[in-house]
Length: 326
Image (cartoon, rainbow, N blue to C red; front, side):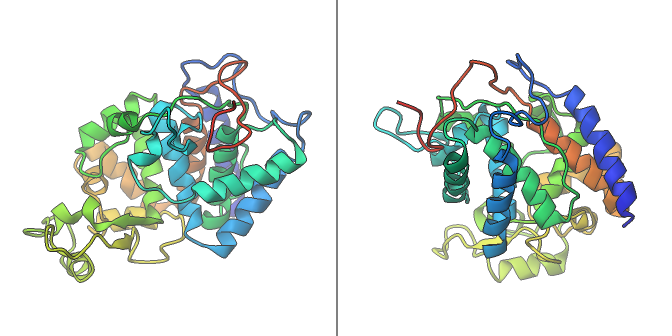
């Protein structure tokens, strides 16, 4: 990989994404180096703690990226995914899908609060941690992430069911889901590369294994999965498997696209990227050029980070990421 080429791609594409970042309530807009005056140590603190967490548990890189995606796609990037259930709201987003990383985000928040109390939002911490995860787990050159998000006060279980794309979605469903958030087909294909790392429960893809194997799945790959994932209703539990059983399951990389091409991905929604000529061409392009994909991924992550953000006096800056301020 030519590092200079990758750096240039990241800088150009991220800058372009920042100019077209979608938002329903972005006034004032997000901006780079938002905390330069109010908390100059903010990004460095997030980076230091995030790196330490991932070094201690390599699965956490994928967890941070997934938390950021889930947060942004439900109510916008407002840290609503982090709110605990309470007596007044027992059905928060956390109840909908089991996710990893909540305690880790609280750890990062505590470190930031220690240097700058009541300044840095949990929503921005999620964005910085996702960016830093790409650097640590994917070998990306660090790229700028605009900030200035504020934290929401509403979190609803049913919003997750309505807005998070299903692993059984067909391609047009995926395209429509992303379009509703201001994200393009190219963003969809690019961000799907996050499925190169992380883990998934068998229940999310068992329909491709039983009662018969999905013909679009590589037969050897399917046979290996069936040794881990029992048939539905067999009382065999719901084991967890690595998203990427071909190479390093903790590395964010363009290997995902080769896996798609050869039928070695878990989800129907991933395999669907080959069902249309334009998306199949994007898959092939990302497989062939890791540096270009890295630039696109950085840009798409920045763009996603602008979905329906709260800025200015909207929302709040939570003292604790798991609870609204009293």
